[in-house]
Image (cartoon, rainbow, N blue to C red; front, side, top):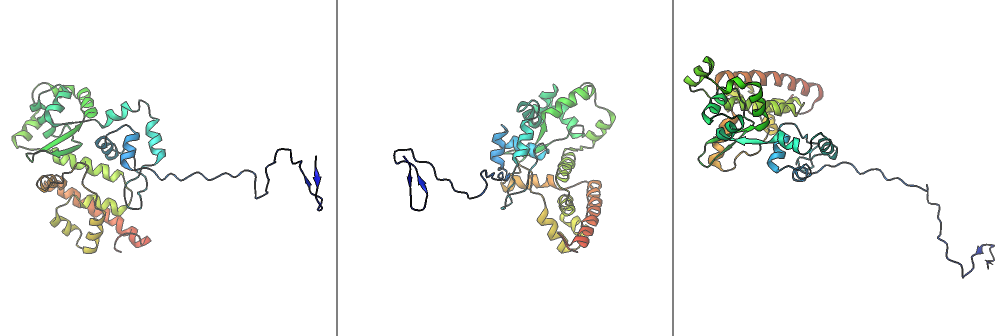
Amino acid sequence: MKVATKSGRVLPDAGAPALPEVRAYGPAVVRADPLPDTGVGGARAAGELGLTRTEFARAVQLGIVRAGPPAPGGAARYMRAELDRIRSADGFPGALRERVETVAGAEAAGGVLGISPGRFTRLARCGHITPVGYRINRYRMVVWLYLAAELREFAAREAGMLRGSAPPADRELMGAKADLRPRKWRGRHVGLLLRRTADPWERAAVLASLLPEDELREVVPDQAERIVLAALAPPPPYGHPQIPAAAAVALRLLRAEPPDEIHWYRTSLDFALTGARGQSMSTGERGPT
């Protein structure tokens, strides 16, 4: 039974089920915009990729995992799209872990190659194998780290160097007590840092960080520019010791030493600063003009 009111509105019978009230507030379907990808921190990103913190830091260092825009406080963030890209790669997660696996010291590295620690030390000191990192042990000695994948590739590519006597060039280097490991590591470290930025002042800061203070003052006499370069200097690599005695040993690894190496970084810095200064003059961005 329906009841009509004085206004003419027809009401449903009291015994009939109530109908929902319909109000015309706008479109029938409202689609919310997707939430922005704000990224996640390093610890969570490592967990989602199945890596330890050390393995994750190595993956970032090598450019396997690319950091996104930093958080407001400056902490590194990693975008979901980047994590999805890595997870979708063939062989994940085993292949990823193999790429970042490291071994420490001549004994372990020699074991991967099937040679004695002494032979491995000679190959590394003569520059045939480049370390990927370092740590300082309790005796304040440098322990070099090597990528296991690179060692296996070296064994396949240079099988002849794993047997027989040392070539004349190596004997000459060993006779002079040369050790190219620090220099080779610095070159690799700088190359990886430069690949991670296109900003001219940041690139100049990477090169400046390799020079001893007196050399830097000669190349960059302007104190204001040195302040900018110091502010943009890259942090020490992951695993750099915090204990002062050990940090002092590791700090020597971060500075160029041989005169020809110092000259190379001086020349490279001078070239980089030319571009950085040109950017500042044209755009007014970052750095003295």
